[in-house]
Image (cartoon, rainbow, N blue to C red; front, side, top):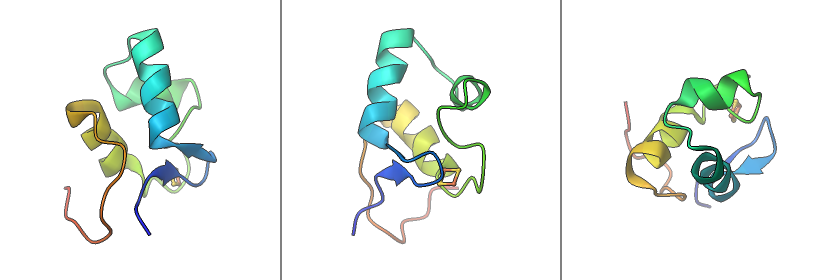
Length: 66
Ligand code: FES
């Protein structure tokens, strides 16, 4: 199963990317301050950062992103 969402906020990386593009966000802190993603367990955080950097919205489990 791919890693493609922030489970805590019940939102896919694809949906987050769409919000990022509409609102011109560039940093994960902007998503966090708006409570869109990545404020609870933060397991999604490295993937959301990678999404912001590369535009990818789905990741293989087990890849090392830190
Ligand atoms: S999965 Fe994103 S904060 Fe928990």
